[in-house]
Length: 325
Image (cartoon, rainbow, N blue to C red; front, side):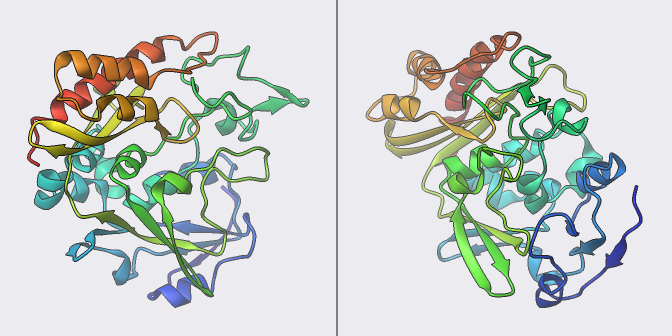
């Protein structure tokens, strides 16, 4: 790990004043579950690390007139165990509780989950976001069993965010603050597919801090279902988050978002369209799963993800209709 300056601001303005105008010179430290490993692997070599854990305004879960506010420093365990989230935003609680490690759930933060870098082994070994060597892509003909089946390149990593699919399905937004002001970005537009090595995979700018997540008032049934190779600490192979607006037992509108199958959480619009006007049964849930993977482009070793995504959608839908409205 390279030597660095450590800053410990107590207020948001102080923290913002310590950030740089470009990526590289500074990094923001929250839970640290991702940043520290990046620094140890020399993938991030900041000259200054800005610890935001002491900024009180970035903490807490509050119900507001517009819905739910989740501070960037709220831990994944707080999200998994919060009674209001479990009752009214079940998909978020499911996603956070799906992290098998108690240590990571207690350390990892909501903001950090959204801003973490890809877990692609090519990226982590220094081949860049687009995983190239001598200008040639390594993923299509390489070890790609955990890579994307949607998106079609040139980025083949999968978004590692646990909360991203559920937040997009729920219509959430994030607040990004710089010294010049703030902006609200829909969760669906926060994740970005990079086209070159100079582009980040999120919409956050180097001089901004993600301060909070805003989730609209709960008028849905929702659930997240993850398929993992093992229950011990591991990354999901496929995820589905669903949010359903209901009129009695009939779906009036639906959003289905897949995770760990694309460089961004992938909205399966065809599945949502199929569900409108229907009741959720095993048959309609299975049909939605099939619709969700329309257009998938598996690589040489990851065609199995198509079937797992189908299963995840079906089980998330059946779980959601058991949940409280």
